[in-house]
Image 1 (cartoon, helix red, strand yellow):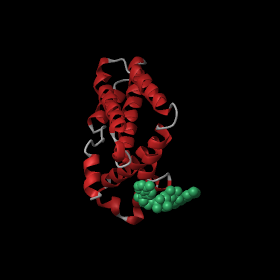
Image 2 (spheres, rainbow, N blue to C red):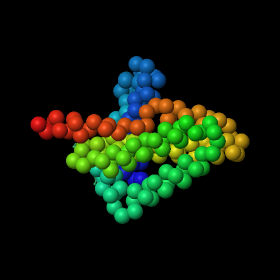
Image 3 (cartoon, rainbow, N blue to C red):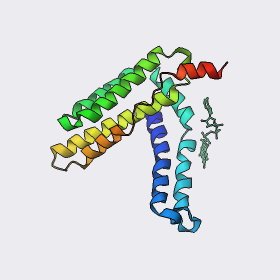
Image 4 (cartoon, rainbow, N blue to C red):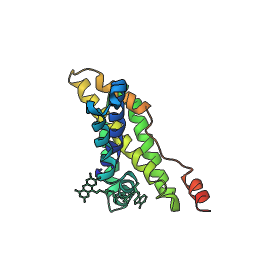
Length: 177
Ligand SMILES: Cc1cc2nc3c(=O)[nH]c(=O)nc-3n(C[C@H](O)[C@H](O)[C@H](O)COP(=O)(O)OP(=O)(O)OC[C@H]3O[C@@H](n4cnc5c(N)ncnc54)[C@H](O)[C@@H]3O)c2cc1C
């Protein structure tokens, strides 16, 4: 989970900081507002926490160790089981399908395994994010704390979770010709 969390949040921090600058229009680009510092500092996260490629390879290495894939699958199942409200079914299903796609890609990948590491790791991380938000949304619904987290879970799932590219092997073969 550690490399997955670091690689996904590092990348997302850069995108979020960039949006924050854009909210200020032209001022967001002007150095002495202090705003460009936010973007520059966010950009260090996908570098010094381990670059995305290296963390993706680290995730594959960790998943291949004894019991790790089963532990991750159990975590995924446990989170999915928490989201019992019918309105949470669509995001949970998106996440579960993405995890299954990543699993089947790794099982079949052969030499394309490392080339596809980034897609697999980002997919697992995004799926876990959706499931964590869905579990939180269930808690909010069950304890009278409103539907905002439900809306977030559904929006997150609609914005692209599955980045596994089944054609990775083809591209890899072409590039190595
Ligand atoms: C501000 C700052 C503070 C830091 N503080 C610390 C610290 O306190 N302690 C510490 O130990 N380190 C620290 N670092 C170093 C940091 O951990 C490294 O910069 C980081 O791990 C990336 O390594 P690198 O710079 O050698 O880049 P490289 O590993 O050379 O990476 C260059 C590019 O090659 C890619 N790449 C590398 N290997 C592979 C591969 N096998 N497959 C595919 N792609 C690959 C990377 O993804 C990257 O895009 C700091 C860095 C910064 C910028």
